[in-house]
Image (cartoon, rainbow, N blue to C red; front, side, top):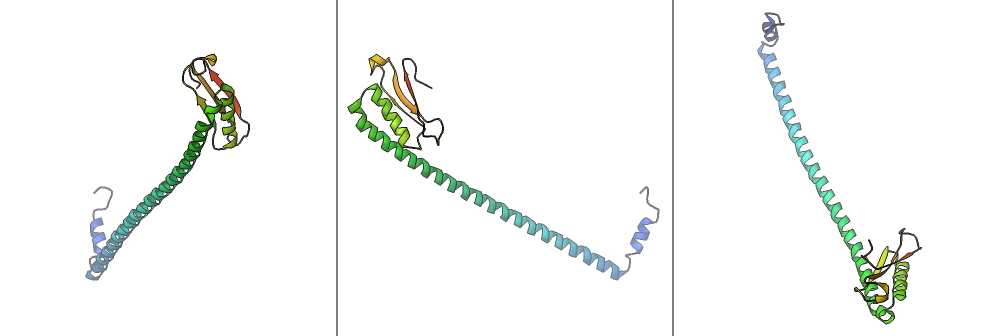
Length: 159
């Protein structure tokens, strides 16, 4: 070995050559190794349990969030179905382009969860309005009570 004195090994071993020092050194090394292995196993187990806990908590949170979202969507779909059924009963009595626009506007004004509503008719249902006819109303800002009315007819459906 270059850089070390010739008798380095002898000097190193001469300090621990007595049986009592050798036993205490070996015992110290064994104790340090056992403690190191124990801490390694303990930290590995704690990491594993922590990882499982975090995964379980994330899964529970996601499940709860999904359930809440599904309930909100269900409520909106039920209300939308109620509005649609009401419109199906009342609209045929007043079936003209102006009344359809009034129906869409009133539905938007009375139901804050709706952002838009359209009533579309079959092609050529109102020949005087063109091939395609759809009356729709939009709420541009969710918390705004102002409803903007638009007509769409003649040509392709509105985007």
